[in-house]
Image 1 (cartoon, rainbow, N blue to C red):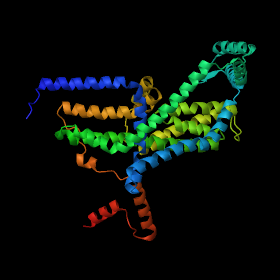
Image 2: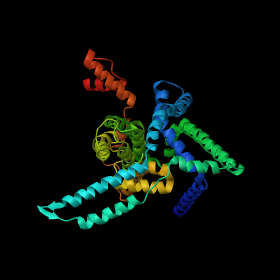
Image 3: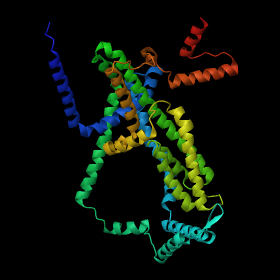
Image 4: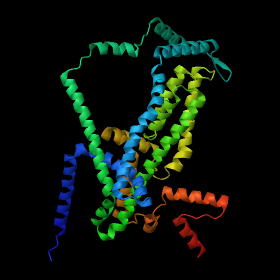
Length: 431
């Protein structure tokens, strides 16, 4: 039997392995983004792969191939379905005459100031003369009116550039290199994701084998909590995007807002940015309302823009109080300020990908730090739930759908054949 290492030797080897791992990560930093994107694709396609493999009894390799073919087909068909209405809406937005917007704003501000100077301000019946504040503002507006402010059109900007632009060999080579590099990145990302999907069921047992046996149940518990956080977050974000996009499209259409579908698509995509997304999505809608007005409501553009602001605010309130608690539940459960700070930090560190993944990363870090804190202080890391309860598999969406249909059939036609999980529960309750 070989001699056991002393504690100092174990510490030295452990620290050395940790530093070596950090060095390997540093060397592979350029490929980390591709690996992260590939891991996300594999993670998101796991439910579909499991459905094909476990429910339809398709071999895992064929299930992975079929899932990725469906993904590629979806990516290819989405532009054909979404681009025409989006382009129509963006053309409406791009046709905005900003000079008219400036003129209307100046006219509205001038009339408002004139009415304030004429009527004054009354507080508790006492008139207050505002001419000292209003007259300088009116003089500034009149001075700006005398100066013609002309904004060049997009065509006027493009024409000189088009006539002056010459394509050189170096520029063409650079563009071709960028295109080839981007295409190779997409291909390698898909290959990484496919291999991850093929061997994903091996990762968890392989990782747990490296954990001392006494700690495996706790680490398995922690991994399950992390998996649920990410799964619920992505599923919730997809549901939020679709729900908010549909609600915004219906509301914009009902209000007569030009480019309703394009603005709704923007609102749905902006849901990827927690807390800040709805505000950013409202900005183009308000601008369109100010300039274009409603297609059928006979109302001033300014008041119509206020209606649009009120509608987007109502959507945000409904989302925060009704939709988010039901869709995301306790998946993230972070204060809005923490999420916003995380989005800014993630964007500065990892760009768009860092901003999108800020919320689940912070939630995962909270779980890991809570576990480490409990172990350092000799506390039970998971006091509110047992390991056995968490290890029980949550019913899949397919099982939930079958159970719901079976119960509906029970109400309509009598007692139906329940799904297997529901049947076992019924037999247990009868015994």
